[in-house]
Image 1: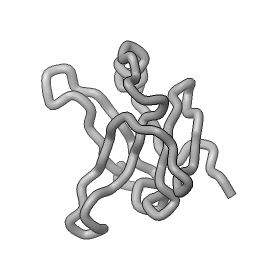
Image 2: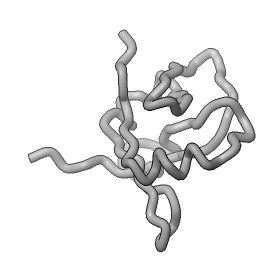
Image 3: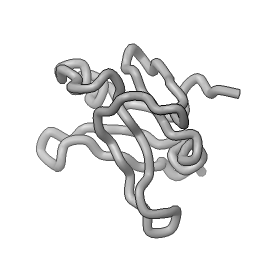
Amino acid sequence: MLLDQPVQFTQTAKDNLRLIAFPEPFLRVGMRGGTCGGTYVLGFDSKTENDEEYLIEEIPVIIDRRQLLFVLGTEISYEAQGNGFFLHKPVKK
């Protein structure tokens, strides 16, 4: 079963992504290095056989099926004064 929106974008992130000419057809969201000490991955890429494809608010996103549970619920924001794009999981209350 495919999810409608496994990740979400803040308005600022959406606005900035729409300004970028994607060098590859998709925005890849994923994890590198495992679940405990892993880091998020955000970049441009082509789809592979292990990827699920989503169109999230007009942004073409791919996520490797093996990483989907780890990135599920991730919010992607953009900080103009900081490091640019930032990925985090909001704490549920």
